[in-house]
Amino acid sequence: MPTHPALPPAAAGGPSGGGPAPRTAWYRGLGFQVLAAMVLGVVIGLAFPGFATDLKVVGDLFLSLIKAGVAPLVFFTIVLGITSAGDLRKASRIGLLALLYFEAVSTVALLLGLLAANLLGVGKGAGPLPADKADVPDTSSQEHGLVAFLQGIVPDNVVGAFTSGQLLQVVVIAVIFGVGLLTLPQHLQTRVHTGMETISECFFAFVNVVMRLAPIGAFGAIAYSVGSSGTGLLLALGELVLEYWAVIAVFLFGVLGLVCLLAGFNIWRIMRCLRVEIALTLSTASSESALPGILKKLPRMGASQQTVGLVVPTGYAFNLDGTSVYLSMCTLFLANVYGIHMGLSEQLGLLVIMLLTSKGAATVAGGTFVVFASTVAATDTLPLSGVAVLFGVYRIMAMATSTVNSFGNAVATLVLAKWTHELDEDKARRALADPAAFLAAAEQERRRERSPEAATEPAEPGTAAHAPTPSQ
Image 1 (cartoon, rainbow, N blue to C red):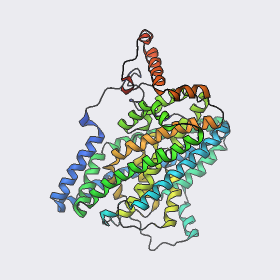
Image 2: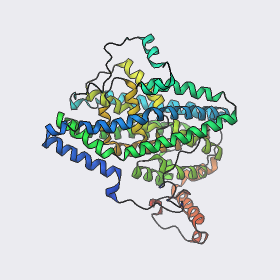
Image 3: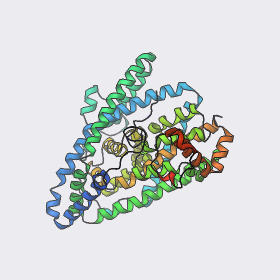
Image 4: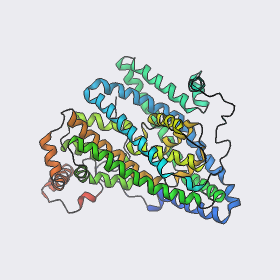
């Protein structure tokens, strides 16, 4: 039962849906507030290192609030994803091929992130930071091996899975619960799915409120880190941002470019046709903001309405390529920063965890960061205190993450439409042959829908740079 992710007001054309949402004062934006808090934390950490180390509790309180919502979010995301996938598989051959495509490309993105993180040594320049023992699970007295692992991830009761702090137990319960829902009659599946979506939205609203406290949490975490380790962490964070954008570019033009080439498309022409949505995603750091325009433009580019309606919404839960790269690189960054060795076996286990936790991250602003926190919690080896440190640069990295997430879903739709013979070749050829004319036609249709009288007026130069409405 794939549904469209909830759209923020900006993506829905403002409160009335008929025009761009009013601009928010720059100083009220969460991105600016986090950046300002990060700068203040650096100043306090350098000037008063003794006092700064006492501010660790501020970051810890923020992380505790994040952790309070992680387990329910993971549970609902996995269950809803399984029920949606079940219906998708039954829908047609497009559904099964879409699932195979999503998992294959997401796995490639995760492997690319892990490979790049190992080759570049992300976080090693910061030197091993001191980790609070309460943040790192004590495994010295635990049994090891396959049997012990299986016993540890299977809970003895449902409530205990949510209270034990073992996120893998929540994942197991969610998978079994989701599969069980697929055995119910269709009318019961629909009722349960709708109810769980409503509860899931409530938890996402809870996380949105907690995220407003992110500047305070980032201030405490950065001040503590700088006060205890000096400028090494700052340099490591700067290098991580630059390296992450470089790896994202490799994935975008290397992996997705190769996929487009194999399907007979030119990735540059697709980007030109979707340049408005790409610009909007970059500016808002939210992949949902581009969803209305993508849903409108892909049928004009030749993809059948059935394929667009099936692949795009489901891709927002299953095909999050940018999120996959972010998870793999940032998780190893934390491991290196805290001097925790992760060998091949640990990284393969991490890969399996990320394949599960990465689903559904685009359903809320900041969802990738919440999923990252859940991934760190699921490893049982990495300290959660490092999560707040990374939030200081999350906004800059989220611009690349969300852009690849949304553009990757557009590419997936066109490619799957081509492979399943659901693509109007003539329409696609015309759109990609002259992206400028395609954008002009899209703008003309937008003007026609807003005002029939304005449809006869020529489109003004540069209108593509304006904030789009849902008809774009």
